[in-house]
Image 1 (cartoon, chains in turn purple, red):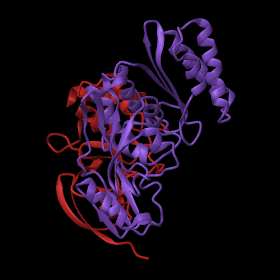
Image 2 (tube, one colour):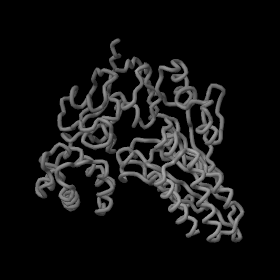
Image 3 (cartoon, helix red, strand yellow):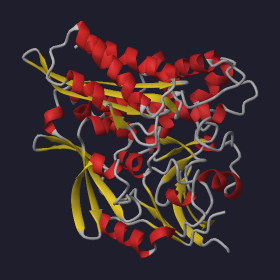
Image 4 (spheres, helix red, strand yellow):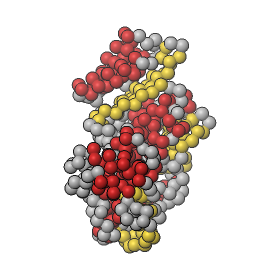
Length: 275
Length: 158
């Protein structure tokens, strides 16, 4: 049984952060709210609803794609701008999140702030070298997504800082990307495996390569061994074979089960063969 | 410790209301217990089955996943709020009956709300769109075929 005493509806990020900081571990920031009712901590005294924050936007800023933290999966799925970026991989990933009902509520900010191994966006953002703009006590900071999500939470979004937006760097705009979610059904929230792959080929050789694996461990990881084989290489059957072997080795680090390694290897091979 | 009482102002099925609300209530509890609107059903209670669907600002959401306080200033439509043009049955309700898409009926309010949200946004939804729009709704009786054909048929009756 929760003991909510205060409900606030701040209209600026600054006011929202002030609410969070005023009752540090007793305040709960709620963006889409898909997990709020399900996992409301008993210690929650202050319910801070973020829906009124002006952070629901998707736009270009210079060469970069900027997605406001309150943009829902549905907004991202239906955005023409996002759909035109990196072959539409971010939209595809958004569309693979659970059912339409969840996509109507869940936000990209919440997907980062409430870490879970099944979350869709972390692997994608990790692979696209995304940055995250946050508001904390000392002001606005822009950090690499990996520093926010993979580090041991120096900043705790929704507790002592607030995510304002996600920035996808312009260099990724024309990358060839693919996102795969392997799950029981299309609407399953729980994924057995998520795989994000991105490449850019320049003059016949691999200029950029990213492979990010999600749902196997609490946080997604980059398959560095496979990336190393491919970086700067000219694609050939031998190189693809070697990269696939390395991907399986990369997955051994988290003791991935055999079938997950086989599925990943097939999906990765398929991606490389059509490049 | 008692929960705080929250003053909720929102619109329910087209009527503006103001209620004192236990701030720990989920939206589903608010609808069924406080408002007495029993058409919205509780199935899994964790956003998987779609029985508790309602429209909030026109979007279908699982009411079991929302806290009632999140309704502040917003517009709620439950299955009781769906009506046909002359106040009778809504076209989806009619086609569900005509197609025999209702067996035990427990999941049907949720399925109708999901279909309504889909067709409001995309009146020309293809059968693939309809299948995708209803992926969050479980039905253990009908095998889905009749539900899908009822939604398909209702497109021409809107």
